[in-house]
Image (cartoon, rainbow, N blue to C red; front, side, top):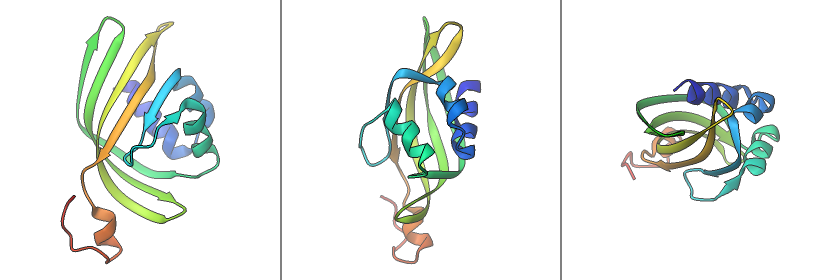
Length: 130
């Protein structure tokens, strides 16, 4: 959980130098809408502020470790901004860490949106969950 916490904090600070030390060279990052980002694409998005993470709060996290691989599942409440506006959302995520040279590095992350809080916040939705 330490590596996850460090990564979320670096994402909120837009600290690409710190993120560079926390991500595996072969990272595959799949945000809630299903696009696939490489390590470079993910870091570029943070650097260029294409997506700004104002807050990330993980909960219900379960971590299992298997011979140099750690698998974590959980939920994250996020407040993000991008060119389309600001959204508060909850994602269910699965992340995989690999142990390299004594450090845990994120090698895969996939999140799926499980709440539609942003549409309610903007007054456009009925409040139903998707």
